Image (cartoon, rainbow, N blue to C red; front, side, top):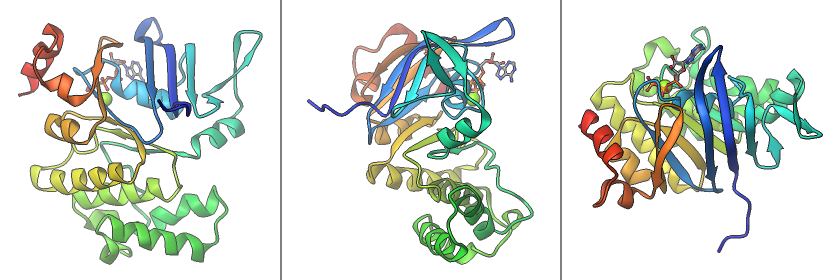
Amino acid sequence: MSTSKPLVRAEKVDKWFGRHQVLKGVSLTVEKGEVVSIIGPSGSGKSTFLRCVNQLETYQEGRLYVGDQLIGYEEQNGRLVALNNRQIVAQRRHIGMVFQQFNLFWHMTVLENIVEAPIMVLGQSREQATAKAMELLARVGLAEKAHAYPMKLSGGQQQRAAIARALAMNPELMLFDEPTSALDPETTGEVLAVIGELAKTGMTMIIVTHEMGFARQVSDRIVLMEDGMIQHEGPPEAFFGEGQSPRLKAFLSTIH
Ligand SMILES: Nc1ncnc2c1ncn2[C@@H]1O[C@H](COP(=O)(O)OP(=O)(O)OP(=O)(O)O)[C@@H](O)[C@H]1O
Ligand SMILES: [Mg+2]
């Protein structure tokens, strides 16, 4: 049995938007090197959970750890006290996130998009950041697009550039929020292939996806979220094999 601590540990995380509770006691652990996919109906809280991990949202109750860090808070006598901005930036530095809508900067070339944060946040030299960016672009099959502007790229190419940009920060954890749902079927495959390759390198990843075939293939574990709660979790074989829970069957039948 592994004695190393999980990289991500959520314990009874609660999140409200106003009076609407969207995460209801979410507990989940992700081991180092593990790939966990989150599936579930629209509005079930999948994005909100990822956004809490990356501090684009704050949770109100429970505990959420990445490595040794309690995300967003300091615990003082059992109470949660919010971190300041500098502390939050430091915690987010090693978490990469890839969004449905790519979120590249339009006024910068692909290369400029990728080297921006390593230079500004990690303090790398331009030479060092550029060398690493070119290596990453080659890895995602975009070496020849380094000097192109995002507007000139296909959706799949933009998303691969966004993945390279996230990797340039040397993340210890990668979060993907429906990375292919804005893409057409032809380019979906090329982005999934890049994510699949990344999984093989031992990167720890949490992937929100509606691509069931992909989730089955790439994940060590799959989690079904419904109404702000984890309803079911297990390895893909258990998830898609015999003996599915009625809830899971019902959800899967809505997307096939
Ligand atoms: N900024 C916000 N303010 C208020 N309510 C929000 C906000 N963001 C999300 N919600 C609500 O929180 C709930 C969970 O939303 P979330 O985006 O996490 O769902 P999801 O599982 O990612 O859905 P989808 O599959 O459609 O992306 C929904 O009811 C949504 O309307
Ligand atoms: Mg979502």
